[in-house]
Length: 347
Image 1 (cartoon, rainbow, N blue to C red):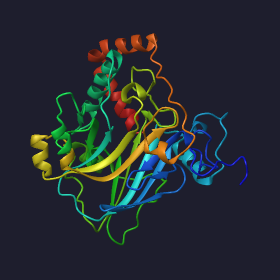
Image 2 (spheres, helix red, strand yellow):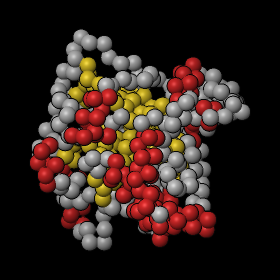
Image 3 (tube, rainbow, N blue to C red):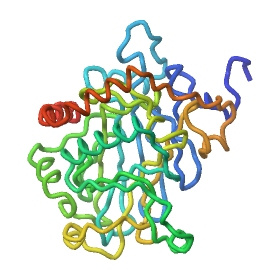
Image 4 (tube, rainbow, N blue to C red):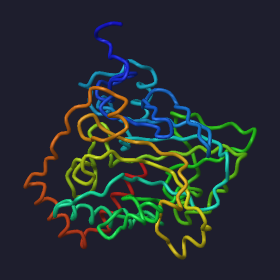
């Protein structure tokens, strides 16, 4: 093996031809603890609930700067070309067939394994962000997870919620295309097309707008202008400077998952809006997102060598002042902020 090549099992493994910074982030399929390399090829995922592929498209620095070295891998070059001119920091595409039909509502969740301790600044930041998210996402649900009042018995019985944000799959996915048997399916890595009328209908009505079955092929994608996985930073939020995700989540990794709430029909859920208790959740897909020097305690730490010491989160006094000004002005500028969020979210 050439000395310049990374050894198997390191953070830089399987990243030859990619931008040099891409290996700083890590995505793991938690069903089998396998790493998914973004900007390469669609990655096969098979479990008890579905069979298909996921393709992770991640914005690398060369997209925005001509001074940055370009990736030499053709698929990585294609991703850079695709994301150039768009606001998206990432786009995750999925194509699959179900092995079983969900009987309850499906949610897209972003969760952590342990509660976080928030200081004054972090609490203010979270309150602001949750309020903004709730205004533009129908059916949005969140929980701070286990509290001091949660008992060991509740945890043992699954009668508790993890710290998480959740959105109905039908309302939160940016594109959903249903292909009947025999019809051509969209190509992953390219723009996915859905009619504007269909998108508006899904976002307005949420759960129940997609007819799930085991015959059709479902192709969907999620993108965002606000989360940069390589930098582990939130950005482009109106009125707030870019900030490290660690300000909110601490040093733990983030888990992106699709899950079903069992034992409740869509209409019943919309009326009662019950908590997302672990005992009532059936996981369809779960990806761990971690960072080489921002997270610890992740699956990636166990299967990859070369993890850097976790860096301290930098919360400067100027950041505090900026946040306070933003929160003070929230009431008067909320409509324009929501408008800005909606505009970036669509690009």
